[in-house]
Amino acid sequence: MVEEHGVSERQACKALSVPRSSYHYSPKPKNDVPVINELQQLVGKHPAIGFWQSYFRIRRKGLLWNHKRVYRVYTGLQLNIRRRFKKRLPARVKQALFQPVAINEVWSIDFMSDSLWDGRKFRLLNIVDDYNRQVLAMEADLSLPALRVVRVLEYLKEFRGLPQMIRVDNGPEFISHTLDGWCRQHRINLTYIQPGKPMQNGYIERCNGSIRRELLNANVFYSLKEVREKIEEWMMDYNHHRPHKALDYRAPVELLEALH
Image (cartoon, rainbow, N blue to C red; front, top):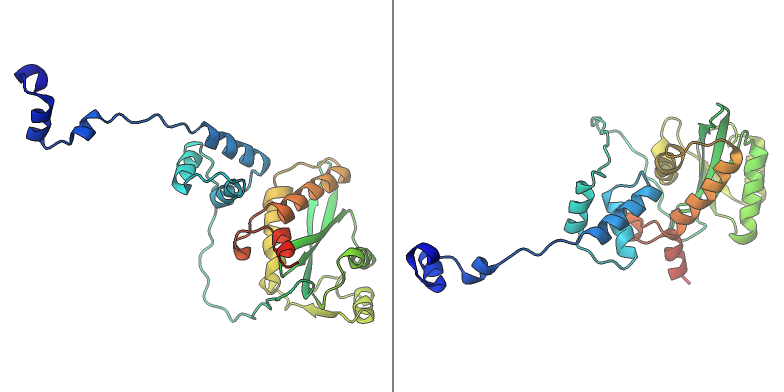
């Protein structure tokens, strides 16, 4: 209209009901390079974490980007993790999971297994304080009998103290007289979950899931030395830097420090 009919810009905008600010608007180029770099660095180090774990890790660094912007970049980089969802089962009768209100009230212990590159099987002994979800110990070896469990607990006693209760499943290492006798000696209530009810030990089962996705499935191990090195690195990140929704997006050690 301005070029062909010689009307002014103001008259043309008024005739078409277009705000002059919209007419002059030109979109600013989006500089997503910092967001891209942060996401790539995070996912490169933690390949199994999803969007919200990535987002809250970024927030903990003091980078206050809007979650919509981060998600747009996240999906643009095709970092979405596919998840398989099981069909819902009919409601089952559940036993309430005891929720501790202080550290060293309840520890959960469980085993996991995996294999080295040459096919040799190895086992992991995991010990978690249910109160702040802190992984207290992860022991890896080809064999972990009951005496080894007791040795790890004795080591934890030196700097952490001992719990009032230890919750375990019905594995042979846990139902042995060795562990039972040690718990009686230290006046610890050794509690067993019902067979086939792993969620009665839900805190450590959830931790085991993270270990499986982020550590065991994400790495190829050629030796036990490599397993132990990766364990130490993973524990440090999990305890000191990983935000937990149940802890108001704080890391386990952060919650522990807040109590003192």
